[in-house]
Length: 239
Image 1: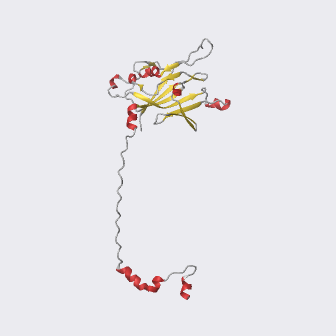
Image 2: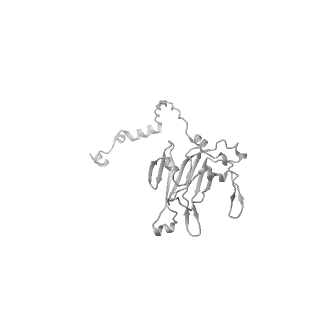
Image 3: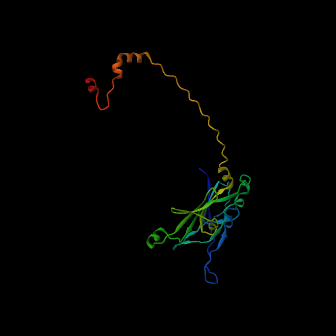
């Protein structure tokens, strides 16, 4: 089992007004702005009125980031389509580590290894069956060679890393850089040529006196008597 953290990030509300030309636009926000929730200084007000502050004490090998895009009000399910700008490599979480635990976390940089993107409108399962609407979840994964692949159902194809940054990321999986170095296999040692072992012949086992006595009782006629092909022992005896 590999330990991991599950961090939930809240998006700012969508703007209610459109541009001057009447077209709507998608706002953008850096992921470090959303991670200020875990810097130990930003206060979060709970529905009960309690105030809390969050910070990280021990950075795990893997980090699962959930970007909360859906809010359920009294009438319908609403989706926040804000674009989150994030780096594919070197995501530094030094600002999220508690000051007392800085010495215990020398490595604070993460690399993105997998991601899920949500496409479509937020349609509930019952409504999608009746109206024929649907939403899609596309997964992305990085190979050991650094290539990114897009997976949707049974279709797998290579994609450009630049397309991930402008997509509506929903769930992201980051891996600690120091953990990647431990996971990479080292150079293999050349195998030594196997020496061909010389098989020793076992000496033949001498016949025991009991077996020799049994063959003498059978006699030469009984020892050499065998059925011919296509006949039986009785027919051979009659001849």
